[in-house]
Amino acid sequence: MPKPESKASLVALPQDLDMLSSETLKMRLLELLDGDEPLAIDGSAVLRASSAPIQVIYAAGQSAKEQGRKLELHAPSDALAEAFRDLGLESEFQEWSSADA
Image 1 (cartoon, rainbow, N blue to C red):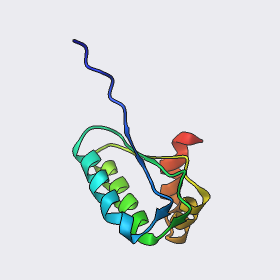
Image 2 (image 1 turned 120 degrees about the vertical axis):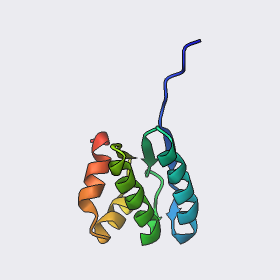
Image 3 (image 1 turned 45 degrees about the vertical axis):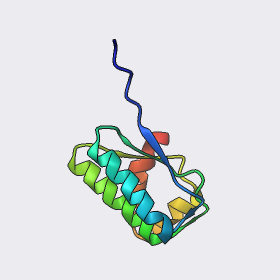
C-alpha cells in the first residue's frame, strides 16, 4: 500500500500570542522538530504578540536551520510582523515568510 504524501502540520497561532501561549507553542514546535515534517506556522490570526512567543518561534527557526530544515511562516499578520521588528528580528521574519511572497 502506498504511503500517503507527508504534509506539513500547520501550527495556527492564536489571536493573542502572549506569555500564556508560549509554553503550548514551544511544546508543539518541539514535536515538529523531533519529526521530519516542515515547521509551518500560520500567523494570520495574530492581533497582539508579546516577546516571549516570538522568542520561541525564533529558537525553533534556529533549531530547524541547524537540522538543515526551514521554518515557514504563512500569512503573517501585521501585528506579528511588528513584533518581530520590535525585537530586531526583521531579517529572520523576511526569510521565514518569503515563501508566501
